[in-house]
Image 1 (spheres, rainbow, N blue to C red):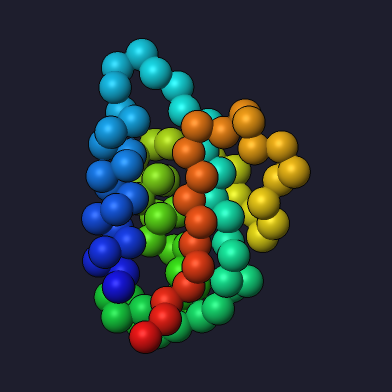
Image 2 (cartoon, rainbow, N blue to C red):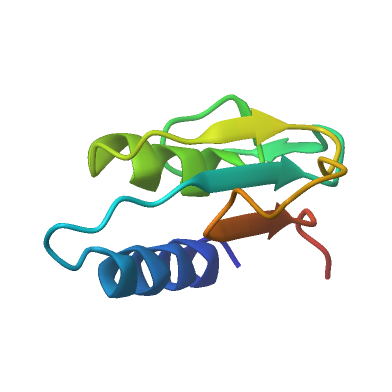
Length: 86
């Protein structure tokens, strides 16, 4: 599931990476920090970890929150993190 999240995040970010474009990104933590075991580094992480890590490594600025803003017109991309479910 984590690999799929990272793949989708990379695909969307790659699509938005056109030269000269600036994106406003919102990461919505809809699962309210539900933790699971991190298979790579040990310990626990939440479902937003992969998306935030990809955005940080690519140098993108983003806004993060636990609630969807009432006005989303200022955002070009909204990542809705719904957790990891079987």
